[in-house]
Image (cartoon, rainbow, N blue to C red; front, side, top):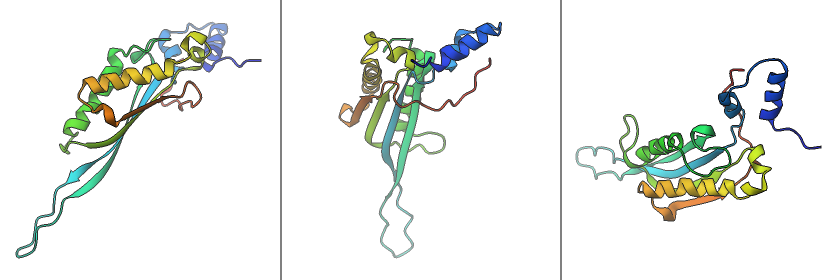
Length: 174
């Protein structure tokens, strides 16, 4: 017997109990409709100020690992690999950090690699028409980042379908 996806089970329980289910609740219960972007690199640490009469020091490195999620209905429609404005906004924040730093640290990030992992939720993954949807979403994110000036030679992508579920990081108002 196939297990019902979590969203369908909760939605059925809510409907049976007499409560209405909003599209936002269904979206909240399907966190695996997402793409994870991990950026590894470093920022150049300025050389320490030399003491009088001493040789100047060498600059150092601060390792950087950035992770961003483009997920849910704000990033992708059900069964679609077209990146929506909410997902683009999340990625724009990442591109800004790469190019010009964040907060008080305005140093750009020297990117070593970017790994993009596309996922689908269980309902999408069960549809044979969505066989490569996870990879198509990852490629859509890659194309968007390349369009924003990120070097395509540094980007690697893969699709994980719904095999590696993400823990729910927000709670639904049911």
